[in-house]
Amino acid sequence: MFENLSERLERSFKILKGEGKITEINVAETLKDVRRALLDADVNYKVAKTFTDKVKQKALGMNVLTAVKPGQMMVKLVHDELAELMGGESVGLKLEGRPAIILMSGLQGSGKTTFSGKLANMLKKKQHKNPLLVACDVYRPAAIEQLKVVGGQIEIPVYSEPESKNVIGIAQNAIKEAKAKGNDVVIIDTAGRLAVDEEMMNEIEALKNAVNPDETLFVVDSMTGQDAVNTAKEFNDRLDFDGVVLTKLDGDTRGGAAISIRTVVTKPIKFVGTGEKMEAIDVFHPSRMADRILGMGDIVSLVERAQEQFDEEEAKRLQKKIQKNKFDFNDFLGQIQQIKKMGNIKDLASMIPGVGKAIKDVDIDDNAFKGIEAIILSMTPKERTNPEILNTSRRQRIAKGSGTTVQDVNRLIKQFDQTRKMMKMVTGSRMSQMMGAMKG
Ligand code: GDP
Image 1 (cartoon, rainbow, N blue to C red):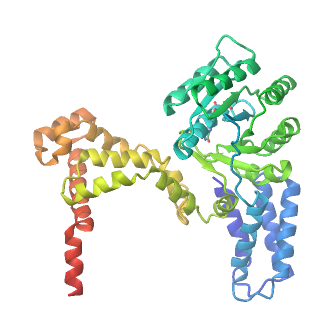
Image 2 (image 1 turned 120 degrees about the horizontal axis):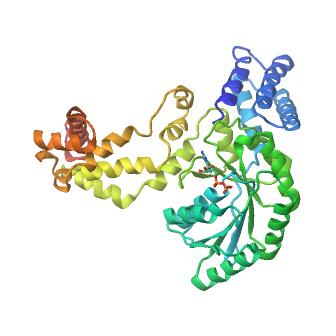
Image 3 (image 1 turned 135 degrees about the vertical axis):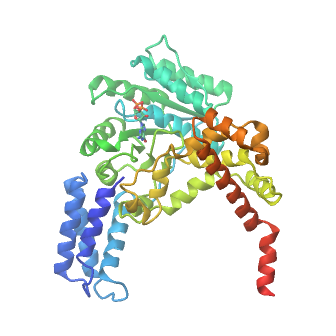
């Protein structure tokens, strides 16, 4: 995401490269470029103008600074101002009610149902909450079913009344059920329309008044550009919502919505959705988003996501196995599955500074692991724990079973052997022997 804007901004800063100091002229030139880049990225006109005016003021006020290069200073100024524009600090959810109630709003297809699931999953895993999902989209026949599928995936209960069209009644019954069953968060998924219409607004407004939510979130597809900002404004005028969820930031969005929404509706962006998987949700951090827009990568988010998937007990267990040279194909498979859970591989890689641009046109295939998985899954349990027994006829059988070739199987086994040896060397006692020898 934001590749275009990032590239354009980087080019703008080049004007200052080689310039010894910041002057009114080179600042004006740079910022004219920055402004054009923002407008092309669908940033609201007024927002872009105010933005560049502010940066200009700051830049000119700073021209005594000689320690940093003008280009670097400009990047920093633009970065900080972008972060400020997107809200400065990250704002969390206020979940005080017993149960706490979260109401989703937004147009059809914006990603409400998907996000309801992602949020429930996140609250369960990270905050040890016990959420209940509520299906209040009673118009689209498949909507209830869709929420049930999502709930099933993440093992979170879904309350629905397929026969009823009375959304207030459904929501109130769901809250009663939550109290009875000890669910501490109730997430209400509502109906959207293709465009803002009066009937839908009336319904969600009435629903909001009836259940008095702790948080009303407005979900919006970031790919819709300027429309996203207009829709946000209309919903906010009626609902006075508490926060914005920007979905589909993994797509081909130009990013303008992320930058202008906050200024136009003066409500914080609280979460972003970056994919269709249940794990593809991030808490919105303005400063980190500014990093991404400027192509500086987002190491912090990457590390956080990696940590979430990291299980300390499991790591200790693996280390013991490696030391005893018992690391086997089951462990290998487990590792692959963990990496896959972290999300789309290209997305992950693009968060590393410098890598994003480099791999922009490279086709990284999430299916790269599929062949490997298929081969391991075609092994018998005995073969997986004792790779030594993999003789030629076994290898032939595995190739057939996994739809690969014997060469593929041989290659994987060879890689596995090498990995195992290397792991042992790094973590095992030989490492300390080597270190000892070197010191001695
Ligand atoms: P709703 O009508 O507002 O409930 O929207 P849905 O949750 O049904 O989402 C509409 C479509 O967008 C579905 O195909 C989702 O899989 C997809 N979607 C939702 N969030 C994201 C996201 O963050 N990234 C991507 N790529 N797709 C998403």
